[in-house]
Image (cartoon, rainbow, N blue to C red):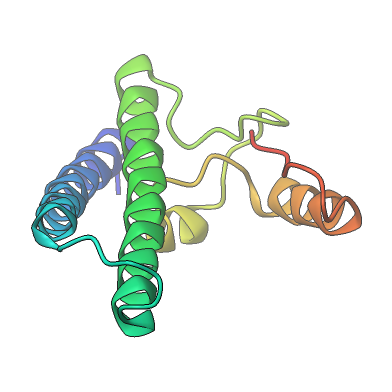
Length: 125
C-alpha cells in the first residue's frame, strides 16, 4: 500500500474516532450537569458514580488530545515517526494504535522509566 494511501486511511480512521470520542464526552458532560449534587452521607453510590464518570471524562479528554496530536502530525508530514528517537513507528503498531507517538522500543523504555519513578509525575512525550 502506498504511503499516501496509508496516511489517508489513518486520517479517516482518526477523524471517525475523534467524532466518536467527542460524542461520548458530550454525553458524559451532559450527564454530569444533570446529576444532582449529593451530600456525602446521602448516598455513597451516587458519589461513586459521579467520580467514575469524572474519571472516564478525563480518560476521554486525554484520548481526544492524542487523536488531535496525531492528526496534526499527519498535516505536518511527521505522522508515523517516533517523537523520541525519530525512527519510523512500526506499521503494525500504528494499525492497532493510530495515535501512537512512540515506536515500541521507546514506549517500553518510557514505561520502564515511569515504573521506576512511581509516585512522581509520569514522563509524557
